Length: 290
Image 1 (cartoon, rainbow, N blue to C red):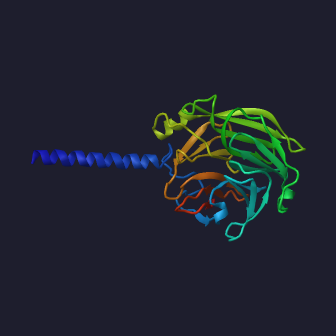
Image 2: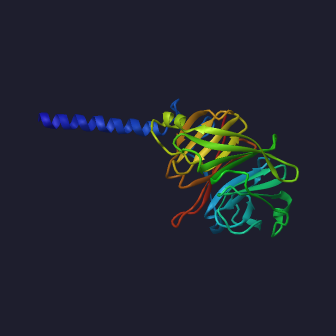
């Protein structure tokens, strides 16, 4: 009888610990499981056609939600469509390659390849079958793997986060680089920044997570940076100066492989997920509520 009571007590304590861990893993340091104004468990889901099975980066032009611009991992194409439409259009800008993100700034499209090579061209040309005036920009970024990029329309600044650079320790920091977009579509380096991975670990209550950013966007409503890490399945939020303020573990049943992120002019949040052999690629829309 005594052994049975001890066993039951241990079992109850274990269940309680598991419940506590589960709750902790779905909350930030203030006990919230979603950023203010959003519910990460209740999206509007848009499935992508087969040609966007491997959808990666997404963006809007000046936040206008009538057209979403995207690229996928394998082909040098930029896609444009309205969410909910069954058909998508595209224009070819380059050869096949591992393209990871897209941005639009001052009517210029900027494409990021995983090796840090950038491509820029006029937005007006993507309605053509082939883009004619493409600039290929090499050597601007140090050796590494890149996936996250954001362009600020007001400042004409381009922000790029390294997923894994050869000169950094991913358990300590994540490196970022800033470029000024020139009138001719070229880029000039104007600064750098970093994400303190130890701050992320402190909020999560975990050690040596190995942070690998896959998408970057700015919430202009709050002046906060939103950073996705597909490997870790987390959404990290920093203030305007890149200080980590919150971390939200993502529901794996909704976020299969989150690779892209954008906000529209109404502050709605969009996250794209790459598909697989058993699931379609999709874009999840999280409505902003005051």
